[in-house]
Amino acid sequence: MAETPRTWPSIRLSRSSVALCFAVSCGASCSVAIPMGGMVSASFMSRNHVLAFAAALALSACAGVDMTAERAELFAEVGTRAGAAPAEDAAIAARLDEPLDQADAVSIALARNRGLRADLAEAGLARAAWIEAGLPPNIAFHGSLIPESGEPDMIDLDFTAPVLGLLALPARRAEARDRYDAARSDAVLAVIDFAAETRIAWVEAVAARQRAELARSIRRAAEAALVAAEELRAAGNIPAVDVDRERALAQRARLDAENAGIAARAAEQRLRARLGLDPGDPLMLPDRLPEAGAAAIRDGAVDAALEASLPLAAARARAEAEAKAANLANVESLLDHAALGVMIEREEGEWAEGPVLEAEIPIFNWGRAERDAARIRADQALDRLAQMSLETRAAATVAAEEAALAAEQASYVRDEVLPTSEAVMRGVTRQYNAMQRGVFDLIAAFETRAAAGESYVAALERHHRARIRMEQMRAGGTAVVMDGAGAGPDMGAGRSGGGDH
Image (cartoon, rainbow, N blue to C red; front, side):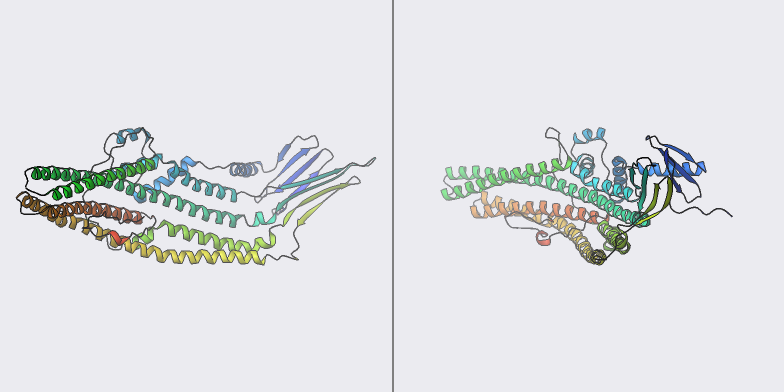
């Protein structure tokens, strides 16, 4: 019958050395001799098994985190979910030499935004914690030497390892893995949300350029109308007050054009910052937003968004981690300060050895509060998960409906509102030139045409924003409930807001 392996470490001491011997699960053992002079030597039995075991321990002890590989894994998952990937450095300059589309904007931002890089470091930190949790605890050593005159020196050596650190190693490793999974889901979520926000920043910048061009065209028309009014006044055909009204319209159009230009430059600067561009880097944008297409909302889009939701996945992982932590707390609260080891003592020339057990005596603190706190955290995580599920479903429903409605409204403004306002403008202008309409009618026609143009840009912007949000949801990103207050076309003279900020 094979000899049963010893289950606790032992120490053998001679006058010249201290030997630490561990029994391993395969039945092999090793001894490490520590001479009194400080040199270390080792002898092995069952050498192949011990070498393999030692090599595994050495490799695990020096395991580290490669953030380049970590980011590559994250971007690979993002590519699968959202179809986005960071651009290669060599390709960025070429893409910036021509008008930038949404996809290229996202690729450049993923490659160059330092804030995103900092956010992704959280996944690396969680992996480091996971690696750390999987390592066995180090062995504690305590030794004393008491010289005695004319007698052999008294030597007392203790080697201990924390009991909880050994018993709870699998549970701690599993808990750390759950927390890493949650952090990784958060990192992928951050990239998906970042890509969506970059697309929206691109939409806002292009929409601002389109509004600025619209404001400039209205300014040119108002200034041309003022010139015509001044000529009619010089011929004595209209009173001076009509010229003043035309002048006021031209002045307001000038201020609107200047404000629209400022807004366009501000939106471009925000996009530049998100892309990680330096002040001297070129940036070309299209003059107009793409036409609104079909929203393409499939049946079951809400359920698909729920299934893909990374916030829900992270919440589930955290709930599982807290549940495991609560189970671990039942043991940890009582054995946190327990240690098991071996003691070797030499006194009066004789050696003695025996096991050592250290533990706190739970007289004043039985760890009840610690266990209760762990259970409370576990229940808290479950409650948050349940509420997040409800809120995510509601947000997905709103996003799907908003995307469909925005597409319909953009088409309506393009096909109905714009042609009507242009027809009114042409008809009133002809009648005004024929002295059949007054200046008030002309000003009203200008304002109607300007409001229609602004409504079209706003509808286009809202359509693209809603489409981006829906794509963000389908990729597993955060569910953003859009503000429906500005969804409809605004036929007034003011600006149409409406957004999901």
